[in-house]
Each structure stands twice: as structure tokens, then as C-alpha cells.
Image (cartoon, rainbow, N blue to C red; front, side):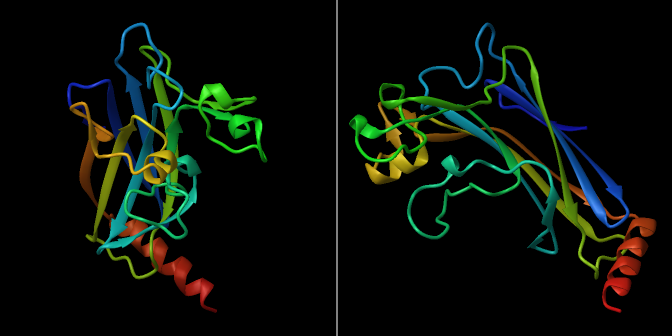
Length: 208
């Protein structure tokens, strides 16, 4: 298992296995904070795991596994730098839904002062591990010896991204950054011949 920790609130571990024409990426994120769920603090503290796998600079398509929740992106149309919603990964937060000042339709996520409904509570309990498994599809032109780049990050934010962008929240407030990476695991995986042969076979059959 490849692992990474910055001496912060969590550690991360990653393993990769080839299964025919697919890559299986198993992750573990452990809460190192004693006595508290993580992320700690008020409801709008949030964090997420993002898993990126690429071959020759091209991202591999995700076939199975969780995706980063939409709250990791802003409300601006299109994907902006810093938008992670929909990518392979998992969210860690207490997400609430409600009407702002009791007006309009319910929206999420909101602060506890506007909350009516608990949508999800995915924080990691103290000392425990949050496991997740993701499957990616190798391209049909993959060859034995090709190098796959794997990167797994855990990113913490002090506020929901949509609110931060709308209110033009600065990158640093009172000496604390809005966002910081608390674990980062990067490594390469060399494709084995038997797996690459199966990728070729599957791609050939699909073209018939």
C-alpha cells in the first residue's frame, strides 16, 4: 500500500490492482483526530477525497465507485478550477438542506441556522478508517509496460465552495487558508502484459 500523511488530521493509503482491462483503486482515509469526527467544527467545514488516474496524460474513465459530491464545486456554469464535484472520490461532511431565511425552495448545502433536513453525514469517526474502492477502464491501446499515474488527495475546506465563490471569500482569512491539502499520495503503476493483452482483446471484440 502506498501511503501519505502530512502530520495533519488524516492519513491516506492506496493500493492498485489490475483486473483484465480495468484498474481497481482501493483507498483508506483514517481520522487521526482524538475524540472528534473529522472534519471537526461547524457544519460548513467539509473535506473530500479525489482520485485521479491517467495513462499518457489522459484521464481514465471511471466505471464504478463513489464520486465527489456536488458541494465540492461552485454554482457557476461549467467546470472551474477548484471544482471537484463529479470526479472519482468521496465527501466527508454533514450536509444540510433548507430554505434561506425561510424563503424560496429548499437548497443545499446550508448552514445549521437555515437547515430543515439532514441530507448526509459522512464524517469519519475518531480513530476510524473510511474505505472506498474505485474502478477505472484502461484504454484499448494500452500496452505492457505503459505507466499509469495515480494521485489520491484529501482536501479540506473551511466553507462550502459555492458560498466562498459567491461571497468572494479570500484564499486566506486570519492566517488560515480557505482550502488545504491534508494528504497527498502520488505514484506510478506499470501495466503487466497479461492485463494489457486483455485490454487489446476486449477493444478488438468491441469493434466487431
